[in-house]
Length: 128
Image 1 (cartoon, rainbow, N blue to C red):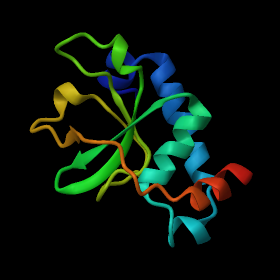
Image 2: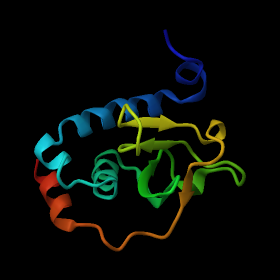
Image 3: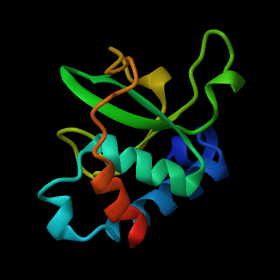
């Protein structure tokens, strides 16, 4: 059965992004996944592969990075685009599509761009 959100709220292109992101993350070797790929690097890697904008910020009380399903410039002034989160803290499945209007209180808060992205980890992911 398809949920209301899958059939009515999320666009077909967003569902496809979720499927692609899930496959990309599944293809990351578990040896590196468990030892050193943080959400900050994984979001950038998947974002590059899918052409999506990365956002750094806070999820709950945790520093976090996620992807917007549409560029922020295309959003309405009162509504942010949906989120494709490739490494959701404390939840399964790991890759999720999130509709912010139903996520209250708001767990995702935008922040400043990170300056500690490990380029060696990104390079390893890109070489795959």
